[in-house]
Length: 129
Image (cartoon, rainbow, N blue to C red; front, top):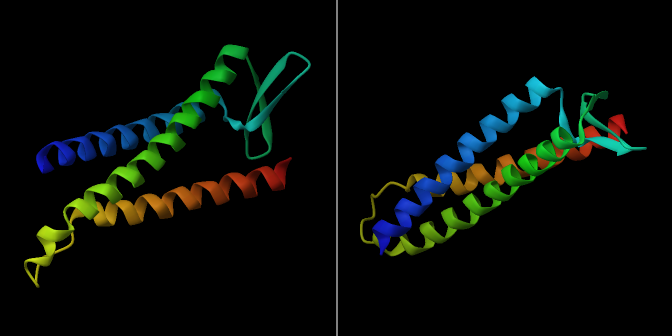
């Protein structure tokens, strides 16, 4: 059972990592993110540092859903990492000198990254909108 949970945790971590990197690179390439953009009057804009780039409706909604998937996968990674950490806790308690699993650091890092991303989005929206 532990082996399956560890494999799922590893898969979700890699999926989250590569999805996030892909989202960032594509956002730079297409001129911003839908989270920072707007749509009005049938026109769609991606936002990047207060600069709006007009794009098609398809590109706008792609950026929106890709950004949403990045945030959702990050939350899923935090939850699965926490569950994995709790399930493996009894193994670590047997040895007084055992090192923390990478998942403990992964959960902590995921929580910090999530809140940093959230603060950047809130601050960015507040400053430029």
